[in-house]
Length: 478
Image 1 (spheres, one colour):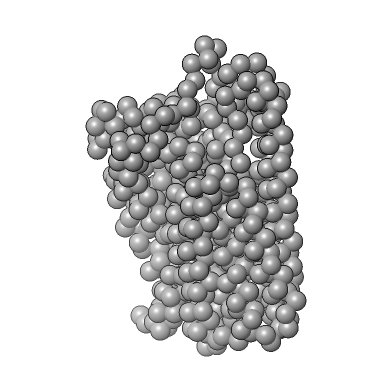
Image 2: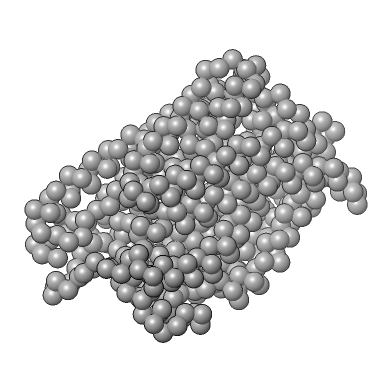
């Protein structure tokens, strides 16, 4: 690079400047060797990463199913623990507070201890908390276990996004983040179907169905933790299934667009450089906006469908289509965002689609059940599908291992207040009105996301014009 200053390009770019102008773009993309390597990595990394996040999301969101499961016979979570709707909301909120606090330190330990060991530990821990919820009898027990569940689940999603930067180049990450995030929508679909089946176990072994739900959905995470310890690959340079030539190619691919397993642990100076890069806070603000719809849909879709005229186990089953559609749309949008290298535009468009879905739900009559159910599907598809391009967009503008780990964790942490907001906006007393407050808030925040994406896109275009005039080789991606 030539004639570049910290003021012009942001401090995390300065970390990677080389005085001898030796930087060169990776030129072997699309070759047979490159494709073979990426395919080999995908087969080892994506199935296990998607499976881990599916189980995590299943264990996080099943409380929404437990809230309404067999409510007509008073064998639901609230009835048996004598919790009010307000106390239930508090239990949801403490999970998110723990989630917000422990995300950043978790990414530090992931790099310090290695991904396989840290993620396996998290998995074992959250499975115990989930299964423990099957034995709670009061508000205090539910709240304590939900807080600990948040502590252990906090590190997984930012950890997996960070983990991918050790294996994939910038233009390869969004679709892979999408596969992982889409596992959440798949978990939502499975969760509704599983709750429908488990609902028929009510009274089996003297336990209510919601207790069986926590036990049976926590068990797969418990059994999978040892597999993650032994089979999740850590870094390209440490695995045995890559040849020396493939390891060299992996290092070449990621020389300027990835994190590195042999990089030093983050220092205070590394953290300071990332913390004072103010343009990153625009990314964080946008992610805050999407976090409220993500959180509220995750936790209240069973409640929303129950308010659309569906009862008991049928309400559980009707949560499947919104998540199933969102799964397909998320993958297609993310592939397109990577293919056309247009992450900001894709996020803006589909945030707008989600906003329209919520807006229509808010203005339709409360008894327009079929139309509002269709709007729920549109809202879910738009809300979920704009997240992977947002995360890919952030990581594509981070070019040091330390910056990537901290900024990704901060981004998710800034979303936590948005997720906390999401637990309050679907008010129990508004069921007969069709939950208008929740729909209006989500619509407004998704429009904010769309405007934020377009504004930041134009800012990056402006900065790139400056950088080109100065002869810079590295530009901002959007």
